[in-house]
Length: 439
Ligand SMILES: Nc1nc2c(c(=O)[nH]1)N[C@H]1C(S)=C(S)[C@@H](COP(=O)(O)O)O[C@H]1N2
Ligand SMILES: [Mo]
Image 1 (cartoon, rainbow, N blue to C red):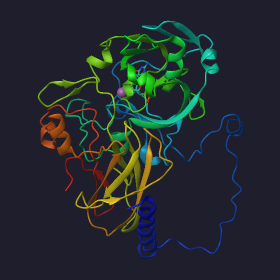
Image 2: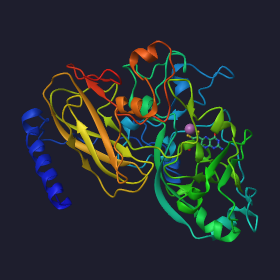
Image 3: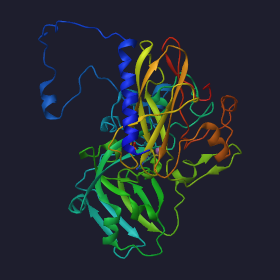
Image 4: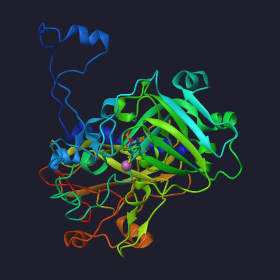
């Protein structure tokens, strides 16, 4: 079937579902617009200088520890991730102020860009020390890419975060998928810089290092530098925010978040990985036999329905728009299927363009809910032929035994998890997490 035919088929399906909207819900009809209420202004200076959101808009990042307890060192929510509230967002770009944050125990450093330098050395002909102005003089590109922590939607057993079981019915999409966000990044391609420094043939890895006190470091295979890694100084049209790495960060599109080194101050070309803290003692994935996978880079394809999702409540039977995001660490999303009956049947969702490679892609499906209990789920496909797996397929492929009973018994879960996310819609319209409990 040609793509024209399939979009026509989709259109007919969509129109048919929309035509039934009238039958399903009655929208209030009013002949009169309410009188203008003469509202007082908000805070004029703040509006005009930088802009503020309406006081009625209250979406915020939530730190895992902040929600379930706090960091014993100072009582503040920290480290395990400040998550993006996907259920309250639209489209494909995450507002910078709501981009998730993972900082390994250090608050964002206060870096003066006039003093910041990026050192590039190791197996190169011409080591350099670049200032921000040097970088601004180089040809720039802007690209839309998601970043996802490999801990996003990880499956945790009891005891990993005390009191927190990833399979608990109360989990929201912010809990389950909030460690992924998508921005337009602007900066210099690493390949541009390679031309200037002349990398030696023996270089097979590079190590990127951050400027914060802990000096987060990550070893990355050389091919990423010639392929699509970027040294980014801007996010969504303005300088990167301190939480995201001001004034410079590495963007390694589609690679696990830990590779996207923030507050970037050094890149060293080498012929072996460094075995840094965050690639050995953690950011490895445990198998059910107690061994670990390590040096995983690309995030597999993944999708999640963000509306309706955990802890939302449907107003009643009738028409509802199912929508969510899909992405792949390997390329473009080509298809998303949605099931409205717990995986018995799958329908093609409408994919909203333009579709960027390694970027959030919005999908939607018009749905007429009869009012029965059911389970909603989505699964994505990328242009490399990958399909988002079920939990059974993940268990099979990775040698895992993930199930509710397994985790309840205190066994380890896994990170780097891209399984299908089921949401149960109860008869009263309440939506809950149904991972491992889908029908
Ligand atoms: N310098 C530095 N870079 C870092 C980290 C860090 O702690 N320090 N955390 C990494 C991890 S584990 C992730 S998932 C991403 C998160 O990027 P974000 O905070 O901009 O969302 O940054 C990575 N880069
Ligand atoms: Mo991460």
